[in-house]
Length: 468
Ligand code: URP
Ligand code: ZN
Ligand code: ZN
Ligand code: ZN
Image (cartoon, rainbow, N blue to C red; front, side, top):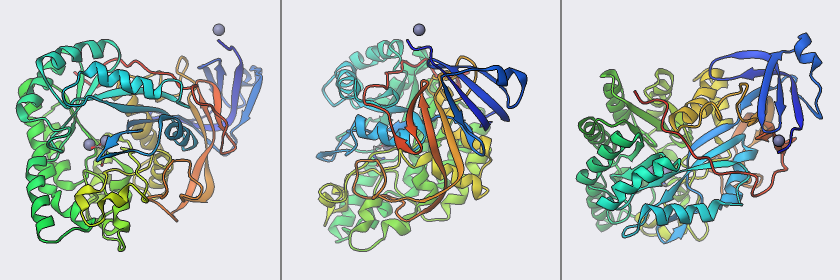
Protein backbone atom coordinates (compact mmCIF):
# COMPACT_ATOMS: atom_id res chain seq x y z
CA UNK A 1 0.00 0.00 0.00
CA UNK A 2 1.28 3.48 -0.90
CA UNK A 3 2.30 5.84 1.88
CA UNK A 4 2.40 8.83 -0.44
CA UNK A 5 1.46 12.03 1.35
CA UNK A 6 -0.82 14.71 0.03
CA UNK A 7 -1.52 18.09 1.64
CA UNK A 8 -4.59 20.09 0.71
CA UNK A 9 -3.86 23.69 1.61
CA UNK A 10 -5.90 26.82 2.14
CA UNK A 11 -9.48 25.62 1.64
CA UNK A 12 -12.61 25.89 3.74
CA UNK A 13 -13.19 22.38 5.09
CA UNK A 14 -16.92 21.73 5.34
CA UNK A 15 -18.39 18.71 7.08
CA UNK A 16 -21.87 18.10 8.47
CA UNK A 17 -20.55 19.39 11.79
CA UNK A 18 -18.12 22.22 11.03
CA UNK A 19 -16.73 24.79 8.67
CA UNK A 20 -13.02 25.48 9.32
CA UNK A 21 -10.16 27.02 7.39
CA UNK A 22 -7.83 24.08 7.63
CA UNK A 23 -5.18 22.14 5.76
CA UNK A 24 -5.71 18.42 5.40
CA UNK A 25 -2.93 15.85 5.50
CA UNK A 26 -3.49 12.58 3.67
CA UNK A 27 -1.19 9.58 3.90
CA UNK A 28 -1.83 6.68 1.58
CA UNK A 29 -5.56 6.10 1.50
CA UNK A 30 -6.48 7.89 4.71
CA UNK A 31 -6.80 11.32 6.23
CA UNK A 32 -4.28 11.57 9.04
CA UNK A 33 -4.66 15.13 10.31
CA UNK A 34 -6.33 18.52 9.98
CA UNK A 35 -4.70 21.71 11.23
CA UNK A 36 -5.60 25.39 10.98
CA UNK A 37 -4.29 26.92 7.77
CA UNK A 38 -1.11 28.85 8.51
CA UNK A 39 -0.58 27.15 11.87
CA UNK A 40 2.93 25.85 12.67
CA UNK A 41 1.59 22.28 12.61
CA UNK A 42 0.17 22.64 9.12
CA UNK A 43 3.22 24.49 7.83
CA UNK A 44 5.51 21.72 9.03
CA UNK A 45 3.79 19.10 6.89
CA UNK A 46 5.76 17.89 3.89
CA UNK A 47 4.19 15.90 1.14
CA UNK A 48 4.83 14.53 -2.34
CA UNK A 49 1.66 16.20 -3.57
CA UNK A 50 0.36 19.63 -2.58
CA UNK A 51 -3.10 20.70 -3.68
CA UNK A 52 -3.91 24.40 -3.49
CA UNK A 53 -7.52 24.79 -2.36
CA UNK A 54 -7.49 28.55 -1.89
CA UNK A 55 -10.99 29.99 -2.41
CA UNK A 56 -12.38 26.46 -2.62
CA UNK A 57 -14.39 24.21 -0.36
CA UNK A 58 -12.80 20.98 0.82
CA UNK A 59 -15.68 18.57 1.30
CA UNK A 60 -16.14 14.84 1.80
CA UNK A 61 -16.77 12.92 -1.41
CA UNK A 62 -20.46 12.49 -2.07
CA UNK A 63 -22.20 9.29 -0.98
CA UNK A 64 -24.98 8.40 -3.39
CA UNK A 65 -26.98 5.69 -1.64
CA UNK A 66 -29.33 4.98 -4.54
CA UNK A 67 -28.05 4.10 -8.02
CA UNK A 68 -29.00 1.50 -10.62
CA UNK A 69 -26.10 0.86 -12.98
CA UNK A 70 -27.02 -1.68 -15.69
CA UNK A 71 -30.44 -2.32 -14.09
CA UNK A 72 -32.59 -4.58 -16.30
CA UNK A 73 -35.99 -2.87 -16.61
CA UNK A 74 -38.89 -3.08 -19.02
CA UNK A 75 -37.09 -5.27 -21.56
CA UNK A 76 -33.98 -3.07 -21.65
CA UNK A 77 -31.23 -2.09 -19.19
CA UNK A 78 -30.03 1.15 -17.63
CA UNK A 79 -27.47 2.62 -20.00
CA UNK A 80 -24.66 3.35 -17.55
CA UNK A 81 -22.38 0.45 -16.76
CA UNK A 82 -20.52 0.36 -13.47
CA UNK A 83 -17.57 1.76 -15.41
CA UNK A 84 -19.29 4.70 -17.10
CA UNK A 85 -21.60 5.44 -14.18
CA UNK A 86 -18.90 5.56 -11.52
CA UNK A 87 -16.71 7.68 -13.78
CA UNK A 88 -19.53 10.18 -14.12
CA UNK A 89 -20.13 10.05 -10.37
CA UNK A 90 -16.47 10.89 -9.73
CA UNK A 91 -16.53 13.86 -12.07
CA UNK A 92 -19.58 15.09 -10.20
CA UNK A 93 -17.85 14.85 -6.82
CA UNK A 94 -19.37 11.56 -5.66
CA UNK A 95 -16.87 8.99 -4.39
CA UNK A 96 -19.19 6.27 -3.07
CA UNK A 97 -22.26 4.69 -4.55
CA UNK A 98 -24.54 2.09 -3.02
CA UNK A 99 -26.16 0.31 -5.95
CA UNK A 100 -28.96 -2.25 -5.95
CA UNK A 101 -28.27 -5.91 -6.64
CA UNK A 102 -31.44 -7.62 -7.83
CA UNK A 103 -33.02 -10.93 -6.84
CA UNK A 104 -35.23 -12.11 -9.70
CA UNK A 105 -38.37 -14.10 -9.06
CA UNK A 106 -37.57 -17.80 -8.59
CA UNK A 107 -33.93 -17.14 -7.77
CA UNK A 108 -31.97 -16.70 -4.56
CA UNK A 109 -30.48 -13.53 -3.09
CA UNK A 110 -27.09 -15.21 -3.51
CA UNK A 111 -27.52 -15.57 -7.27
CA UNK A 112 -28.53 -11.93 -7.58
CA UNK A 113 -25.71 -10.65 -5.41
CA UNK A 114 -23.10 -12.77 -7.21
CA UNK A 115 -24.33 -11.45 -10.56
CA UNK A 116 -24.00 -7.84 -9.38
CA UNK A 117 -20.55 -8.45 -7.93
CA UNK A 118 -19.54 -9.82 -11.34
CA UNK A 119 -20.85 -6.72 -13.11
CA UNK A 120 -19.08 -4.29 -10.77
CA UNK A 121 -15.82 -5.97 -9.84
CA UNK A 122 -12.79 -4.45 -11.55
CA UNK A 123 -14.88 -1.82 -13.31
CA UNK A 124 -15.62 0.91 -10.80
CA UNK A 125 -13.77 4.22 -10.62
CA UNK A 126 -14.90 4.81 -7.01
CA UNK A 127 -15.87 2.62 -4.06
CA UNK A 128 -19.23 0.88 -4.08
CA UNK A 129 -21.55 -1.13 -1.90
CA UNK A 130 -24.76 -3.02 -2.56
CA UNK A 131 -28.27 -3.04 -1.23
CA UNK A 132 -30.33 -6.09 -2.18
CA UNK A 133 -33.63 -5.83 -4.04
CA UNK A 134 -35.89 -8.66 -2.87
CA UNK A 135 -38.49 -9.72 -5.45
CA UNK A 136 -39.40 -13.13 -4.06
CA UNK A 137 -39.56 -13.36 -0.26
CA UNK A 138 -39.56 -17.08 0.61
CA UNK A 139 -38.50 -18.94 3.78
CA UNK A 140 -35.12 -19.62 2.19
CA UNK A 141 -34.71 -15.97 1.21
CA UNK A 142 -35.48 -14.81 4.76
CA UNK A 143 -32.59 -16.96 6.00
CA UNK A 144 -30.34 -15.59 3.27
CA UNK A 145 -30.96 -12.06 4.58
CA UNK A 146 -28.98 -12.93 7.73
CA UNK A 147 -26.04 -14.12 5.63
CA UNK A 148 -26.04 -10.98 3.52
CA UNK A 149 -26.02 -8.77 6.62
CA UNK A 150 -22.91 -10.67 7.74
CA UNK A 151 -21.31 -10.03 4.33
CA UNK A 152 -21.91 -6.30 4.53
CA UNK A 153 -25.04 -6.11 2.40
CA UNK A 154 -27.11 -4.69 5.22
CA UNK A 155 -30.10 -3.11 3.49
CA UNK A 156 -32.95 -4.60 1.48
CA UNK A 157 -35.31 -2.88 -0.93
CA UNK A 158 -38.90 -4.04 -1.23
CA UNK A 159 -41.48 -2.83 -3.74
CA UNK A 160 -45.15 -2.13 -3.14
CA UNK A 161 -45.22 -1.22 -6.86
CA UNK A 162 -44.57 -3.16 -10.10
CA UNK A 163 -46.86 -6.22 -9.66
CA UNK A 164 -45.40 -9.23 -11.44
CA UNK A 165 -41.86 -7.86 -11.41
CA UNK A 166 -40.49 -6.61 -8.08
CA UNK A 167 -43.76 -6.44 -6.12
CA UNK A 168 -44.17 -7.94 -2.66
CA UNK A 169 -47.54 -8.26 -0.93
CA UNK A 170 -48.06 -7.08 2.64
CA UNK A 171 -47.46 -10.53 4.13
CA UNK A 172 -44.08 -10.86 2.46
CA UNK A 173 -43.19 -7.33 3.44
CA UNK A 174 -44.09 -8.03 7.05
CA UNK A 175 -41.97 -11.18 7.11
CA UNK A 176 -38.96 -9.38 5.65
CA UNK A 177 -39.40 -6.58 8.17
CA UNK A 178 -39.58 -9.05 11.04
CA UNK A 179 -36.36 -10.61 9.83
CA UNK A 180 -34.61 -7.25 9.54
CA UNK A 181 -35.79 -6.35 13.05
CA UNK A 182 -33.89 -9.42 14.23
CA UNK A 183 -30.75 -9.21 12.08
CA UNK A 184 -30.13 -5.46 12.10
CA UNK A 185 -30.83 -4.96 8.39
CA UNK A 186 -32.66 -1.91 7.10
CA UNK A 187 -35.73 -2.24 4.88
CA UNK A 188 -35.91 0.32 2.08
CA UNK A 189 -39.37 0.75 0.62
CA UNK A 190 -40.60 1.76 -2.82
CA UNK A 191 -43.92 3.03 -1.51
CA UNK A 192 -46.56 3.21 -4.23
CA UNK A 193 -49.73 1.13 -4.38
CA UNK A 194 -48.85 -0.76 -7.56
CA UNK A 195 -52.04 -2.84 -7.64
CA UNK A 196 -54.22 0.27 -7.76
CA UNK A 197 -51.84 2.04 -10.14
CA UNK A 198 -52.08 -0.84 -12.62
CA UNK A 199 -55.87 -0.44 -12.71
CA UNK A 200 -55.51 3.27 -13.47
CA UNK A 201 -52.88 2.55 -16.14
CA UNK A 202 -55.23 0.14 -17.88
CA UNK A 203 -58.09 2.63 -17.74
CA UNK A 204 -55.93 5.49 -19.02
CA UNK A 205 -54.66 3.49 -21.99
CA UNK A 206 -58.22 2.32 -22.79
CA UNK A 207 -59.27 5.98 -22.86
CA UNK A 208 -56.49 6.76 -25.36
CA UNK A 209 -54.34 8.58 -22.80
CA UNK A 210 -50.97 7.31 -23.97
CA UNK A 211 -48.64 10.33 -23.59
CA UNK A 212 -45.85 10.45 -20.98
CA UNK A 213 -47.75 12.93 -18.83
CA UNK A 214 -50.31 10.27 -17.97
CA UNK A 215 -47.54 8.36 -16.21
CA UNK A 216 -47.64 11.15 -13.64
CA UNK A 217 -51.42 11.25 -13.50
CA UNK A 218 -52.07 7.57 -12.81
CA UNK A 219 -49.34 7.29 -10.19
CA UNK A 220 -51.42 9.42 -7.86
CA UNK A 221 -49.97 11.21 -4.85
CA UNK A 222 -52.59 9.52 -2.68
CA UNK A 223 -51.29 6.12 -3.77
CA UNK A 224 -47.77 7.07 -2.71
CA UNK A 225 -49.08 8.40 0.60
CA UNK A 226 -51.25 5.32 1.18
CA UNK A 227 -48.33 2.98 0.57
CA UNK A 228 -46.04 5.08 2.75
CA UNK A 229 -48.61 4.92 5.57
CA UNK A 230 -49.03 1.16 5.14
CA UNK A 231 -45.28 0.57 5.09
CA UNK A 232 -44.89 2.55 8.30
CA UNK A 233 -47.64 0.58 10.07
CA UNK A 234 -46.16 -2.73 8.92
CA UNK A 235 -42.75 -1.64 10.19
CA UNK A 236 -44.29 -0.72 13.55
CA UNK A 237 -45.94 -4.11 13.80
CA UNK A 238 -42.62 -5.79 12.99
CA UNK A 239 -40.66 -3.51 15.31
CA UNK A 240 -38.37 -2.71 12.38
CA UNK A 241 -36.82 0.52 11.17
CA UNK A 242 -37.85 1.77 7.74
CA UNK A 243 -36.25 3.90 5.03
CA UNK A 244 -38.64 5.18 2.37
CA UNK A 245 -36.89 5.84 -0.94
CA UNK A 246 -37.57 8.56 -3.53
CA UNK A 247 -40.25 10.46 -1.62
CA UNK A 248 -41.86 12.83 -4.11
CA UNK A 249 -44.90 14.57 -2.63
CA UNK A 250 -46.38 16.49 0.26
CA UNK A 251 -48.83 13.73 1.23
CA UNK A 252 -46.05 11.18 1.65
CA UNK A 253 -43.91 13.67 3.57
CA UNK A 254 -46.84 14.17 5.96
CA UNK A 255 -46.95 10.44 6.67
CA UNK A 256 -43.23 10.41 7.44
CA UNK A 257 -43.48 13.51 9.61
CA UNK A 258 -46.30 11.98 11.65
CA UNK A 259 -44.35 8.77 12.16
CA UNK A 260 -41.23 10.65 13.17
CA UNK A 261 -43.24 12.78 15.59
CA UNK A 262 -44.20 9.52 17.26
CA UNK A 263 -40.50 8.75 17.62
CA UNK A 264 -40.49 5.90 15.13
CA UNK A 265 -37.33 4.83 13.33
CA UNK A 266 -38.68 5.98 9.97
CA UNK A 267 -36.52 7.85 7.49
CA UNK A 268 -37.14 9.44 4.13
CA UNK A 269 -35.03 10.07 1.07
CA UNK A 270 -35.74 12.36 -1.83
CA UNK A 271 -33.88 12.99 -5.10
CA UNK A 272 -32.87 16.07 -7.12
CA UNK A 273 -35.50 15.39 -9.79
CA UNK A 274 -38.31 15.98 -7.27
CA UNK A 275 -36.63 19.18 -6.07
CA UNK A 276 -35.78 20.71 -9.45
CA UNK A 277 -38.18 19.18 -12.00
CA UNK A 278 -41.97 18.84 -12.15
CA UNK A 279 -44.99 17.61 -14.12
CA UNK A 280 -44.26 20.54 -16.49
CA UNK A 281 -41.33 18.47 -17.76
CA UNK A 282 -43.47 15.34 -18.09
CA UNK A 283 -45.89 17.36 -20.23
CA UNK A 284 -43.22 18.50 -22.73
CA UNK A 285 -44.48 17.93 -26.29
CA UNK A 286 -43.19 15.54 -28.99
CA UNK A 287 -42.70 12.71 -26.52
CA UNK A 288 -39.91 14.72 -24.81
CA UNK A 289 -41.80 14.11 -21.56
CA UNK A 290 -40.54 10.51 -21.70
CA UNK A 291 -37.14 11.78 -20.59
CA UNK A 292 -38.71 12.58 -17.23
CA UNK A 293 -40.57 9.33 -16.61
CA UNK A 294 -39.53 7.80 -13.31
CA UNK A 295 -41.34 6.26 -10.36
CA UNK A 296 -42.35 7.73 -8.03
CA UNK A 297 -43.23 10.32 -10.70
CA UNK A 298 -42.43 14.01 -10.92
CA UNK A 299 -45.09 16.11 -9.20
CA UNK A 300 -46.60 19.59 -9.67
CA UNK A 301 -44.14 22.35 -8.71
CA UNK A 302 -45.97 23.15 -5.45
CA UNK A 303 -44.52 20.03 -3.85
CA UNK A 304 -40.97 21.31 -4.13
CA UNK A 305 -41.27 23.79 -1.27
CA UNK A 306 -42.62 21.03 0.98
CA UNK A 307 -39.68 18.77 0.12
CA UNK A 308 -37.17 21.54 0.82
CA UNK A 309 -38.81 22.24 4.15
CA UNK A 310 -38.72 18.53 5.04
CA UNK A 311 -35.01 18.46 4.17
CA UNK A 312 -34.47 21.28 6.65
CA UNK A 313 -36.58 19.74 9.43
CA UNK A 314 -35.08 16.26 8.85
CA UNK A 315 -38.42 14.67 7.97
CA UNK A 316 -36.37 13.85 4.87
CA UNK A 317 -32.78 13.06 5.76
CA UNK A 318 -31.00 11.95 2.58
CA UNK A 319 -30.77 13.16 -1.01
CA UNK A 320 -29.67 10.43 -3.39
CA UNK A 321 -30.16 10.28 -7.13
CA UNK A 322 -32.00 7.04 -7.99
CA UNK A 323 -29.71 7.28 -11.03
CA UNK A 324 -31.28 4.94 -13.60
CA UNK A 325 -30.56 6.28 -17.08
CA UNK A 326 -32.20 5.20 -20.31
CA UNK A 327 -31.35 6.81 -23.63
CA UNK A 328 -34.12 8.71 -25.35
CA UNK A 329 -33.32 7.06 -28.66
CA UNK A 330 -34.09 3.36 -28.57
CA UNK A 331 -34.97 3.10 -24.88
CA UNK A 332 -37.41 5.81 -23.74
CA UNK A 333 -38.86 5.48 -27.26
CA UNK A 334 -40.09 1.98 -26.41
CA UNK A 335 -43.05 3.76 -24.84
CA UNK A 336 -44.21 5.80 -27.85
CA UNK A 337 -47.95 5.26 -27.96
CA UNK A 338 -48.02 3.63 -24.50
CA UNK A 339 -46.54 5.52 -21.55
CA UNK A 340 -46.52 2.33 -19.46
CA UNK A 341 -43.77 0.93 -21.71
CA UNK A 342 -41.39 3.86 -21.10
CA UNK A 343 -38.51 2.52 -18.99
CA UNK A 344 -38.63 4.24 -15.60
CA UNK A 345 -35.67 6.27 -14.45
CA UNK A 346 -33.62 9.43 -14.76
CA UNK A 347 -29.89 10.09 -15.03
CA UNK A 348 -28.33 12.22 -12.31
CA UNK A 349 -25.37 10.64 -10.52
CA UNK A 350 -23.07 13.31 -11.99
CA UNK A 351 -25.35 16.21 -11.08
CA UNK A 352 -26.42 15.72 -7.46
CA UNK A 353 -23.61 17.48 -5.59
CA UNK A 354 -23.79 20.52 -7.86
CA UNK A 355 -27.58 20.76 -7.77
CA UNK A 356 -27.55 20.66 -3.99
CA UNK A 357 -24.87 23.34 -3.95
CA UNK A 358 -27.24 25.37 -6.09
CA UNK A 359 -29.79 24.90 -3.30
CA UNK A 360 -27.28 26.40 -0.89
CA UNK A 361 -26.93 29.43 -3.14
CA UNK A 362 -30.71 29.64 -3.47
CA UNK A 363 -31.10 29.64 0.33
CA UNK A 364 -32.92 26.32 0.70
CA UNK A 365 -30.24 24.67 2.87
CA UNK A 366 -26.99 25.62 4.58
CA UNK A 367 -23.58 24.45 3.42
CA UNK A 368 -23.29 22.03 6.33
CA UNK A 369 -26.75 20.66 5.64
CA UNK A 370 -25.67 20.11 2.01
CA UNK A 371 -22.85 17.89 3.25
CA UNK A 372 -25.09 16.21 5.80
CA UNK A 373 -27.75 15.29 3.22
CA UNK A 374 -25.34 14.24 0.48
CA UNK A 375 -22.42 12.70 2.40
CA UNK A 376 -22.65 12.22 6.15
CA UNK A 377 -26.20 10.96 6.66
CA UNK A 378 -26.21 8.47 3.78
CA UNK A 379 -22.88 7.14 5.12
CA UNK A 380 -24.32 6.77 8.64
CA UNK A 381 -27.64 5.43 7.43
CA UNK A 382 -25.95 2.65 5.49
CA UNK A 383 -23.10 1.73 7.83
CA UNK A 384 -20.17 3.48 6.15
CA UNK A 385 -19.45 6.27 8.64
CA UNK A 386 -16.86 7.61 9.50
CA UNK A 387 -14.90 5.79 6.82
CA UNK A 388 -17.03 7.70 4.30
CA UNK A 389 -19.07 10.90 4.60
CA UNK A 390 -16.67 13.09 6.56
CA UNK A 391 -13.12 14.44 6.64
CA UNK A 392 -11.49 13.34 9.88
CA UNK A 393 -8.35 11.50 10.98
CA UNK A 394 -8.83 7.85 10.07
CA UNK A 395 -11.44 8.48 7.38
CA UNK A 396 -10.83 7.40 3.82
CA UNK A 397 -9.30 10.27 1.87
CA UNK A 398 -12.37 10.67 -0.34
CA UNK A 399 -12.14 14.41 -0.73
CA UNK A 400 -13.51 16.95 -3.19
CA UNK A 401 -11.90 20.31 -3.85
CA UNK A 402 -15.05 22.15 -4.84
CA UNK A 403 -14.81 25.53 -6.56
CA UNK A 404 -17.99 27.36 -5.49
CA UNK A 405 -17.49 30.07 -8.11
CA UNK A 406 -17.01 28.10 -11.31
CA UNK A 407 -19.85 28.56 -13.75
CA UNK A 408 -20.94 26.06 -16.34
CA UNK A 409 -24.00 24.87 -18.20
CA UNK A 410 -25.33 21.34 -17.68
CA UNK A 411 -25.59 19.49 -20.96
CA UNK A 412 -25.58 16.04 -22.49
CA UNK A 413 -22.89 17.36 -24.83
CA UNK A 414 -20.42 17.57 -21.96
CA UNK A 415 -21.59 15.17 -19.26
CA UNK A 416 -19.92 11.81 -18.62
CA UNK A 417 -23.03 9.71 -18.07
CA UNK A 418 -23.68 7.23 -20.86
CA UNK A 419 -27.04 8.67 -21.83
CA UNK A 420 -28.08 10.83 -24.76
CA UNK A 421 -29.86 13.58 -22.84
CA UNK A 422 -29.58 15.61 -19.66
CA UNK A 423 -32.63 16.08 -17.46
CA UNK A 424 -31.13 19.50 -16.66
CA UNK A 425 -30.10 20.54 -20.19
CA UNK A 426 -29.15 24.22 -20.36
CA UNK A 427 -29.28 24.83 -16.61
CA UNK A 428 -26.79 27.52 -15.52
CA UNK A 429 -24.74 26.22 -12.62
CA UNK A 430 -22.37 27.86 -10.17
CA UNK A 431 -19.89 25.57 -8.42
CA UNK A 432 -18.37 22.25 -9.35
CA UNK A 433 -15.72 19.75 -8.36
CA UNK A 434 -12.22 20.70 -9.43
CA UNK A 435 -10.19 17.88 -7.90
CA UNK A 436 -11.49 14.61 -6.48
CA UNK A 437 -9.52 12.10 -4.42
CA UNK A 438 -10.75 8.55 -3.93
CA UNK A 439 -8.84 6.86 -1.10
CA UNK A 440 -6.04 9.37 -1.58
CA UNK A 441 -5.74 8.88 -5.34
CA UNK A 442 -6.74 11.69 -7.71
CA UNK A 443 -9.60 10.54 -9.91
CA UNK A 444 -10.49 14.03 -11.15
CA UNK A 445 -7.94 16.76 -11.76
CA UNK A 446 -8.84 20.25 -13.01
CA UNK A 447 -12.31 18.89 -13.75
CA UNK A 448 -10.95 16.09 -15.94
CA UNK A 449 -11.35 12.41 -15.18
CA UNK A 450 -7.95 10.87 -14.43
CA UNK A 451 -9.06 7.72 -12.62
CA UNK A 452 -9.28 4.18 -13.86
CA UNK A 453 -11.73 1.31 -13.88
CA UNK A 454 -10.98 -1.05 -11.04
CA UNK A 455 -9.71 1.54 -8.57
CA UNK A 456 -13.04 1.32 -6.75
CA UNK A 457 -13.43 -1.48 -4.22
CA UNK A 458 -16.46 -3.21 -2.74
CA UNK A 459 -17.49 -1.77 0.62
CA UNK A 460 -18.89 -4.27 3.12
CA UNK A 461 -21.15 -2.18 5.32
CA UNK A 462 -22.05 -2.42 8.98
CA UNK A 463 -25.68 -2.07 10.00
CA UNK A 464 -27.26 1.36 10.09
CA UNK A 465 -25.91 3.74 12.69
CA UNK A 466 -29.32 5.38 13.01
CA UNK A 467 -31.20 2.56 14.61
CA UNK A 468 -32.04 2.63 18.29
O1 URP B 1 -38.02 5.12 -11.96
C1 URP B 1 -37.22 4.60 -11.22
N1 URP B 1 -37.10 5.06 -9.99
N2 URP B 1 -36.44 3.58 -11.65
C2 URP B 1 -35.55 2.85 -10.86
C3 URP B 1 -36.21 1.77 -10.06
C4 URP B 1 -36.77 2.28 -8.76
O2 URP B 1 -37.94 2.07 -8.50
O3 URP B 1 -36.05 2.88 -7.96
ZN1 ZN C 1 1.50 0.33 3.32
ZN1 ZN D 1 -38.05 2.53 -6.46
ZN1 ZN E 1 -34.31 3.25 -7.51
